[in-house]
Length: 88
Image (cartoon, rainbow, N blue to C red):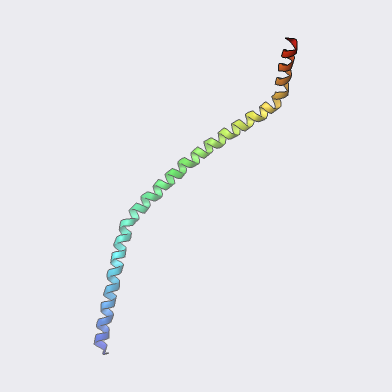
């Protein structure tokens, strides 16, 4: 093969590669805004889920405290109820 034909072949191959890169760049440019919107929506949803989990955790703590309080008060409640039954 002569030098000129090799140069022409290389130019053709470089042109093909440039075209492929141009197509990919255009596709990435179109996808990028959608990805950014998805990232924002995902962050918002996770923030909402985190808030709900915090609320549920607070409610579980409240129920836990009330149950422990009931455990402490239950002997007195039962004693009062049994005394009432005996006096009736």
